[in-house]
Amino acid sequence: MSNQVISWDEYFMGLAHLSAKRSKDPSTQVGAVIVNEEKRIVGIGYNGLPYGCEDDTFPWSREGEWLDTKYPYVVHAELNAILNSIQKLKNCTLYVSLFPCNECAKAIIQSGIRKIVYECDKYANEDNVKASKRMLLAAGVELVQLDYQVEVTINKK
Image (cartoon, rainbow, N blue to C red; front, side):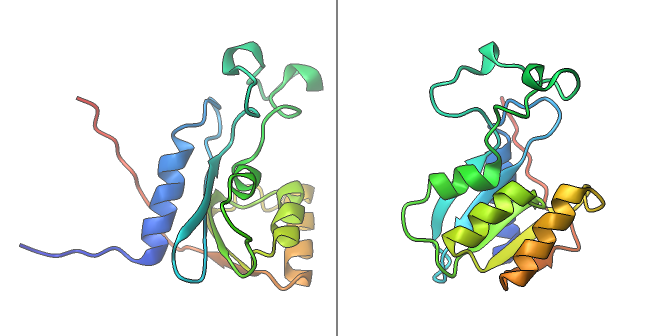
């Protein structure tokens, strides 16, 4: 029997993907996991509506008038993980499936997170991600893009 042990990066990114599967967003499901220096999970989140707001009473569209889209209502996975954290986040690492936007970058920096491990950077040419990288790098946050995709499969019987 082969003992295939996954790396810490694979493990925590896998948990981020598993968390993303809780998102009701039909176009972009994102998950995030915050880990302290002892490799203990201290926060986890996914993109979704704020607590108490019903998923079926708010829009999930990407197009249309701003108030008729998901954008003014959805809390991003990174911010949810920060808000759900159980301890101070100084020197923690954030695992996230999609590179953070500028608004999440502000919260990441303010919370004391020192490293971001991410997979996808599909919005790298967007101004909000350029601003995010500028702030994160200026604040000394280490950015690590995985050169592989972590797959999580759920088999429902």
